Amino acid sequence: MPSYSFRCIEGCEFDAMYSMSEVPRQTDCKVCGRAAKRTVTAPHLSATGSSAFQLVDRAARTAHEPDVVSRLPGQGRKPQRFTSNPLHAKLPRS
Image (cartoon, rainbow, N blue to C red; front, side):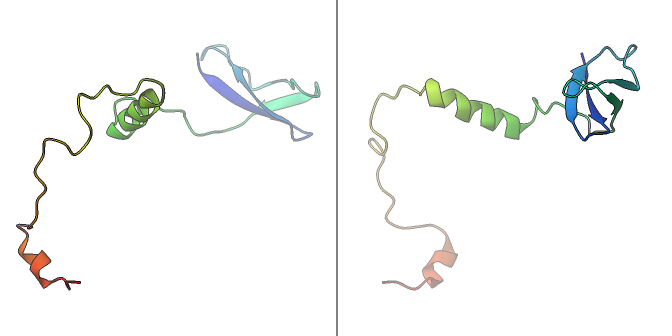
């Protein structure tokens, strides 16, 4: 069910849920009781399929469900001493 924003003359703002066929142009303010008109707002579009949303979801999930690992990070790999990128050869050496 869609959520609609309303604002009264006193400046109170609130959201209310109505079906699309029954949404009024104005209703009583939930805060002060005066007439409140429906305001134009941006639609709340879902981004659940985007990679950014999936990244946020994975980060939130790992906060309370951390991954189980079989070894410490960095073990089992040989450290790479030399880079294969020719541009790195131009960097200053310490």
